[in-house]
Length: 531
Image (cartoon, rainbow, N blue to C red; front, side, top):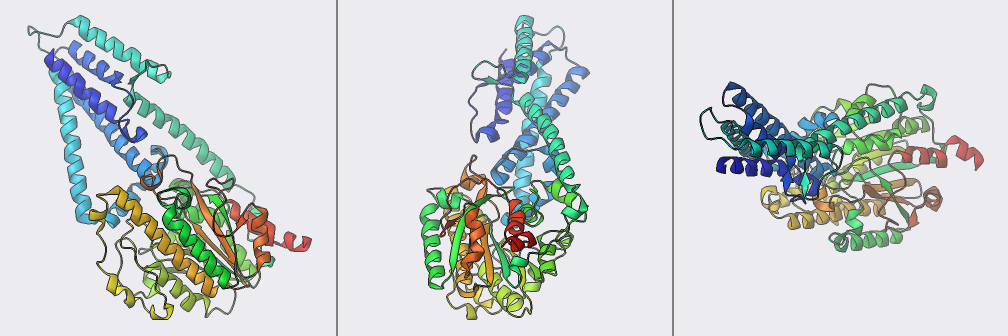
C-alpha cells in the first residue's frame, strides 16, 4: 500500500505539472485522473515482461507529455500563445539560434544537459515505479477492490474530462493536452487552407500597382523591435516610455513636422519579426512560419514592387541578418543591406549586432542621401531586441558616429544576459530602457531628416514576450506617422489615428495586412483621379 500510494502521489505531481504553462503557475486542482488510472491498472497486472513493457511504454508517454509541456511553456513565454505542434515544429532551429544568441553556446549546452538529466530521472522513476506495482504471484498485493476501484475511477474521470464534465479540483491534464493538440492540428489545417486560398487570388489582383500620390516622396518604415502597446499602457513601462514619446513629439514640432498615431495588430507577439514584415509588405496576415514558407513558393508582388512601379529605389536594411537570407530575396528589393554590408567597425552587443543609431546614420549616409530617385526603405531595428543589455546613450553628435568605432567605449558595459535574467523585474526595467533608446534615436533621425517630401512610419514589429506583457496582453503596436506635409497624414486621421505621439487605444481593429490597402486607397491611381 505504501509503495502504491507513493507512486500515485509522484504520478499525480508529474501530471499536474503539465498544466503549469497554461496557468503560469500551480494549477487550480489537486487530482489528475490519469494518475489513478495508471496506478490502478499496474496494481492489477501480474508481474512479468508484459507489465515491464507497459510500464516503460507509459513512462515514454509521460516523457512526450512533459516535453510538450516544456515547449508549451517556452511558446507561451516567447510568443504569447499556446504551442501548436502542427504549426510550430518548424521553429526548432530558430529557437535554438535564439537561445544560443542570448545565452551563448556553452550556457545553452549546460542548460540542455541539466534539463535532459532531469527528464530522464523523472521518467526512469515513473517506469520503475509503475513496473514495481505489478507484484509476482504469491506475494502480498494491493487489494483488488482498491486497485480496480482506482482504475475505474481514473478511467471514468479521464473520459469525463474529454466531455468537459469534471468534478471541481480535478483534471485529466495528459488527455487534455493531447486533445488540445488534436484540436489545434485541425484548426491549423483549416487556417492553412484559408491562407492558401488567399494565395490563389487571381494574378491581376496581386501584381504591382503604382502609388502616384507618393511619387517623389521618400517612404520609410522604421520597425522598432518589441515595441508594443504594453510599452505605453502598462504601468510598469509607461513612466519610461510616455515621457520619451512626449519629448519626441516636442522635437518633431520644433522641426516643423507633423505626427499622427494609431495602432495596428501584429500577426505575432514575442518574436518572428519576419512574419510582421511579410504581413506589412504583402497585404496578407502571415501568422506562422509555415504560411511564410508557403508564401515563398508563389510569385507575388508586394509593396516593394508597388513602389518600384512608382519610381522608387527600394532597400531593406536588416542589421540582424548575418547568414545567407534567400527568403529576403523573394521580396525582390533592389538592395538588401545585411550585417556584413553595413561596414560597422564597432562592437556587437550580444544578440544586437550594431546600435540603432548607427543603422539610421548609415541609412542616411549610404542609402538616402546619395539616391537620385525617391526611396522606399524598411529598417528592421534591433537595439530593443532581447536580452536588452546594455542600454546605450543617444549620441547628440551624429557626425561622430562614422564607422561605429565610437561605440567601443560601451563594449562590455552593463550586466551580461546570464546575470540580468536572474531577476525578471530588472529584465522588464531594461526592456523599457531599450525601447526608449530605440524610440529616441528614431525620433531624433526623423526630426533631422524628415521633410515635406517624406512619409515616415515609426512602428513596433510586435509586442515583447509574455514575460514582459503578461499572458493576456493585446498584440497591437503603436504606429507613428510623421511628415512635413500634413496632407500626407490626412488618410491616417481618417482611419482613426490621432494627432501626437500617444496611441489612442491599446487594441486595434485592423492588422498589419491592412497597410498596403490603406496606401493604395489613399495614394493609388483611383484616389488621385478622385482628388
